[in-house]
Image (tube, rainbow, N blue to C red; front, side, top):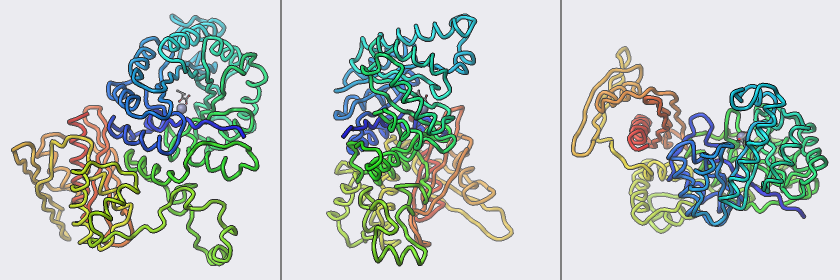
Length: 509
Ligand code: KIV
Ligand code: ZN
């Protein structure tokens, strides 16, 4: 049976989703988890785009040894050089370079001074640039993948010529992106099939599919590609990515597994790691997973109507095509209490895939005890939120020292907040539209930084009025965007912590 390669681009295309930017340390933690999930290739970033992304690729290339580590570049020498440098220590490096191939891209983006005036001239320059880029990338690494950007809307005849040229230049994988999510499954499948039929040297390369979800068809298009000869799928955890996102990794893999009778291919993915990976990515990127999300949403395995529950209890298969344990859903979600003890709690950290140092474990355990006293039972989701809240990968400049909020019918809410910064204590008081608004105004005054709040989201981690509240706040300061997170059983405290986490990230990024 053929094996389909799973190319994970959560840390590159996924991170391009609005508001999802994360730091190198967090990327490394996710990359380790992706390696445990068994992905074949990790696209770790776009080194030329920023020093932080360069560092992320370098770190991941050095530390994560099993999968191929890939870096993205345009068909530009400086981009490729940055990839080569960032990947120096990788065990199995790959450079992913490419250029736009649709007439819309060629005529719309490429300037006449550099590319020529007519479509024919511009197409010729595009092929030359693509070939030069692949040859240059091959000077750094043995594995070069070429992406034909906007292939989904390109003239197939031109696409075939381009692919033939880049394969001849040394590309071992050719990526056929539906960059704008315009394709529909039968046509995209046909495009992949026609590449197999019309590109003379295609047997020297693997065909990869890379589909965006603008019409909700990314997974269907990717599967159509597999049916027609592609053997690599580019996808992201939870389907995050540019605009409406990419094909969801967990969905394509479970479709291939569950309907192996139809597709006749396998993957090397350890599907039991899906739940854990999905929650880790959602937490890090501040993207909430809808309850009805296929495969890993909270309701994906919940049966509630009478007829369904009755049938399910009699025979599981009546209403279940996959088992929750196959994708790693925790069997019991509420078991830890203040009496569980250190050993039990540390064991659960390991089960959740959280690699913590001894000091970090003790730090989270102290916090766990406080929460367990307040809410009796602490779920896995609570624990993940606590770990993320407690173990910030950023050095902390600002700490919450104390706060007081006052809300009363007929009066404007007010807040007094004290923040420690080195040896200094900064205090301010403000009125606001609500207690959170008042607290944020007070902090901004105290620290003399006034970021714009782009998004504020609060979520109860579990059910009940004693639930841990998790807050995400996206802020912008002088064009720099960060996502701050905080968790507490007190939602005002969680909000303040999220704001301070955002300020700490602004200081350190
Ligand atoms: O969607 C796209 O075309 C891409 C390429 C850069 C591979 O993400
Ligand atoms: Zn993409």
